[in-house]
Length: 469
Image 1: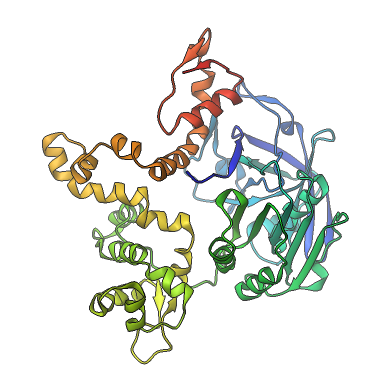
Image 2: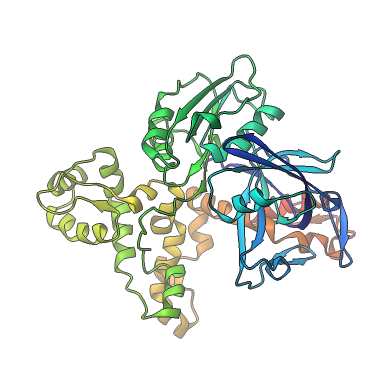
């Protein structure tokens, strides 16, 4: 089973802070310093909440704003062990990475890129001493591997708060190699570099995927065990992700790539119909969608169409068929559907050959393709047996595969690993369970199944140490 990224989870608490001061870090970055009693442990409505904790350099908090100015109506409901995002027509939320956390001074520093648009940037532009701001989070903190020989920190201007915090606090005693794309040379900042560190500034338009990809490829690859952290516009990171995963072959636990924002002028990509989510949305507004596009994308992933076109742009349909060992007639059936959903472009005769569309680039991400070829896809396909399962009281999975899910994963370590990764989300739901008085006096307990690790982590976070069997 492949190593997974490690996270520390935190209770989700709604907190109120007020502006203490505002200043311009550069002509392109504004810093708002916030403070308040809610950064310490506090009690609201009879429920006690822990002090604010954001130990990770790339932690993010969710700012809550109101389009109509009525912030109280936009706030979520605070529950004893989490947050309920109650319906709110005018709620706006934006994720921001703390630049600095100083609990001794009771202060939280947030940096806002100055670009003249967006509700959060507009709020920061008008912020004055005493103005209030509500936020939730962070939800979790990334834990870096303990032994690293180097780390690369890659990003655009939105990544500067995380990069700056890393260099200030140094959670890792290893040389840091920094690459930042900025829209203007005036956006460059003084960074806390040490001997052995390097920094590269590249002037490029926000979201310029080609510039970011070229700059990342130009970085030297140090020897030894390393880690790459990258954050920028989501689509601009697609070629970077492909390079790091497919060419440099960095394992999952040595790589963290996060889309910090999305270009609003990016062309809309039709969502693959037939998925459970798309089906639920479509059923509310129109006819039940056809599963054909989803099945075509699944076939493309399974046959290797996406990878082949990524590795050799410009292939003809015939060359693609030969490369995959699939009859040309089969490829000819598949390509029009893939082209209609922007998985590939250039499928028309006489074109410059096949290359990946926006949706195809996204399928280079392992997480994205799991929807079509991973465990989630297998669960969806099992529902083709839903009618006989309901009629006979059997499991759709057993009817589809001839075995129970338990029997299936017991013989497949990779499949079991997928379930363990999915179960990591359990830690956000277990606060109430671990706070229940039923644990008083428990000396030992038996944990089984792929969710065991998450339950164990929740017990440890609650200070519970029963003997495990």
